[in-house]
Length: 314
Length: 256
Ligand SMILES: Cc1cc2nc3c(=O)[nH]c(=O)nc-3n(C[C@H](O)[C@H](O)[C@H](O)COP(=O)(O)OP(=O)(O)OC[C@H]3O[C@@H](n4cnc5c(N)ncnc54)[C@H](O)[C@@H]3O)c2cc1C
Ligand SMILES: Nc1ncnc2c1ncn2[C@@H]1O[C@H](COP(=O)(O)O)[C@@H](O)[C@H]1O
Picture 1 (cartoon, rainbow over the protein chains, first blue to last red):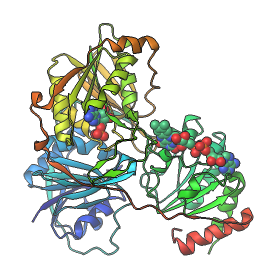
Picture 2 (picture 1 turned 90 degrees about the vertical axis):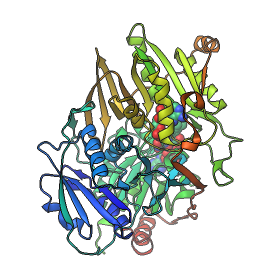
Picture 3 (picture 1 turned 45 degrees about the vertical axis):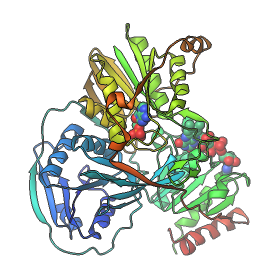
Picture 4 (picture 1 turned 60 degrees about the vertical axis):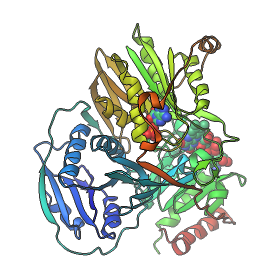
């Protein structure tokens, strides 16, 4: 039986939602699972980790994320616990950490997986910006995978059972890649890569101030706000909001595109959304070919109407 | 300083990609470009060279014969040397990183290595950091700002939703570029003429002791994802269309 490891990602101490997708993925394959958590106090996270065989708590005096230290600690854990397969989230941190870990652990890595079978070490991931899917087979002694958020269905009532808890010392060795400061953005934004609903605006927004219309609509839906590259290039929106081939790949259950034409480079960044809604005044706009539902009209009229309608209780 | 930039040649972002025989793509009508993030890497390498007297920029690309055109355009933009590592089949990330590392290691005085944060064909998101680990040097990815003071490099990288990490490293180090780092330049006419005279150095995989039979990741299958069926446009006056949309989202799509 394979030994599977999971990197449980915490963001400022908060259990990241996509960890549940990782846990659901491995719980059902009935293998020996080790979940690794870097934290001073494990208690808040234990309810989430039910039904897992072993939890490895990494302890240290300063657990601040430094990629050299995290990668080395995880490489040591993989060796110590003889983990054959190790999975994490394809998040900003996962993208930074897993390739370093793969090199240190002399392991193969497939990033951004939509499906993984830990037993056979097969994985499916999008390539060519999602224009194609590739299935890979890892024939290495150790296989690492990162999983795209919002893809794996979360088990509602996972099996119970208290995990066995082990501790492991944090490797507080020297750091060559030194994170000296983390600067948070003033606005509290929703992480688009994990968002369940996204409202996006394009060039049609005309200016930065008009994005407030989309922010108001997003607030009703508890949605994140995205943008096309045209809107970012014109500085109506910030770079972290860009969705598409040279921006973020997002995967919400609902994506509302307002005044976005639907160029291929935008589409590849949001095409896996469960439902796409397009609001565009041009009936010939390519976005209508890709949207589940469309409304032809002026977004400046429709977005506020939509906001009002959504506010109405069922 | 001996500056390096690694780039990959990929299909144009507009290209429709069709599968051939389940494992490769139809290349016949594809226009090849330098992967967009690598363009930012090239620009930053050239800017660093201009600021650091006595520096050279060497462009590195692993791929088949066609990548000559990509290397040629980097030379035209202002790189001094170009190295083509010839590889015709699928080489996995460990092997590719190893091959690039062997070439760079041969220069004991390498300084900053620039790459993109991701190549937009296989979207592997790992070569850069593997390369740095292989060379035993620090590295930052998704970099949107870069400065050098003496032997110290300071970079800013984007993490989640507008948050940024400020990172310090010493040279030698690797920097993987993201959008926002700079605005890539075009080659000048003079650059294009000059580039024609520079010889592209060719290295075979066997010379560096890497080969495809060492691949540990095997590509089993390429396929086109299922296409969404065409959706529908909701007719009517804006107020009615919006009502209907919300109803559909609640009752049919069940996403609200
Ligand atoms: C290498 C490369 C990478 C790229 N990467 C990305 C990427 O990551 N993300 C991305 O988005 N793009 C990307 N692009 C750009 C892409 O090709 C398009 O240019 C861009 O997506 C267009 O943005 P847009 O839809 O906002 O603007 P436009 O194409 O100008 O469309 C604006 C739309 O708004 C509609 N409209 C105007 N006024 C109104 C109104 N009042 N109400 C309703 N509708 C209205 C118009 O009918 C039109 O359809 C990339 C391009 C290249 C070459
Ligand atoms: N074949 C290659 N030759 C040279 N550099 C490459 C090659 N493949 C990837 N790279 C570099 O590594 C970065 C990350 O690529 P990837 O891990 O494939 O997404 C790219 O942006 C390039 O800078």
